[in-house]
Amino acid sequence: MAYKPQYPSICDACNKDILLTKRQLEQYVNHFCDRTCHAEWKRATKHFSPEARAVTTKYIITLLLGEKQCPRCKEVKPLDGFSNNKGRPDGLSVYCRECLHDDNTTPAMREYKRSYAEKIYKADQATANARQKDYREKNRSPYLRYQYGMTQNDYDLWFEKQNGVCRICGNAPPDGRNLHVDHDHATGVVRGLLCQTCNSMLGMAQDNVDILAAGIAYLTERK
Image 1 (tube, rainbow, N blue to C red):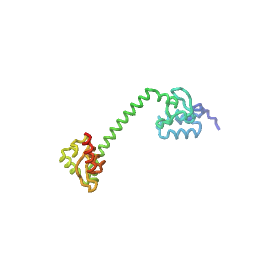
Image 2: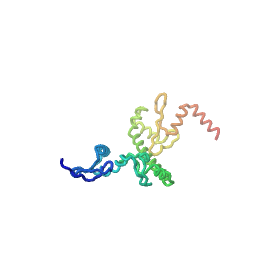
Image 3: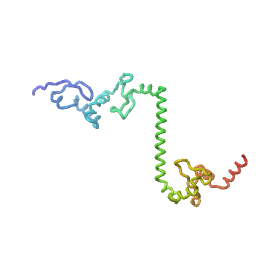
Image 4: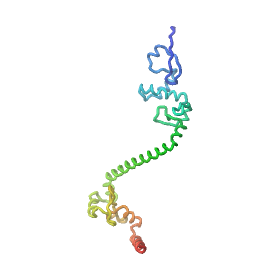
């Protein structure tokens, strides 16, 4: 059997020095020391393009060696010294836990987190309000028909009859809001359109005239 000269190379999975034949060097782009390294590298990069696989080699080496260097403190630490980050190829954060803790406890970072959270909350709140308004507009007609046995046209007639104001206090609803439909809970008959405050007042008093009259007397006596 003829001797085949071997040439030095580096395993793309574990970064060890290996010897390959000339045919292996020319035929394959990636080189491995054994099938285990090849299988590990292929599993970790199965969803990557050939270009991305070459870039990801150093992350596979990190996983195989079981340690990683923090670019901030320059220390080589075990993998459990880094937080999990699914967005990165190696599944670990860039900096170690100690460096991340130091960054997150500075006054500037605390202020940034507070302002960022407030900004995100306001944006989410505006989006939620817009989504809720759109939902109410799309589902108002079915709700009126199911809850009160009236159509949107009936509601508009009531609204026009009351000049767009509450039947009790005479105040118009806030922008983008509708007057509430007040009805008799015993018979289900619609009595009129009220603002949220007046509608809640009747509900708290359980539609009891005596309770409302007693409240009027109470306020009159103490003026």
